[in-house]
Image (tube, rainbow, N blue to C red; front, side, top):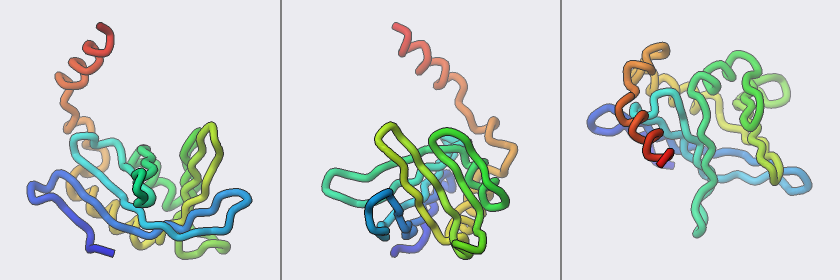
Length: 146
């Protein structure tokens, strides 16, 4: 695995990690993954799993959800994050769900903590709104209504 990446201008972070994937009726498998963060979308992180000829599977969810999930179970809907506990002491468990099914992804707690620490240096928690380009958001919303 490569070392964590921070952009030269300090606006994004990418951490390569290994995720242990559990899907019903399949043996567990370890896959390469990447945790991504960009100040342009300050509230969100992306978990990009796999590297296949057809691409990756990407899940975008709140950075706050990932952070909260280090301390207690967090989330509703498509993404749930659970902290380490006696059954999986050294990993954060992320459950992702879609219409087609669900998967459990275990990622080393140390990797998640290092990633979040680096995102916090780019955009401290609670200051995300200062990094939103409202003109761009409004333009995108209006473009979609035409």
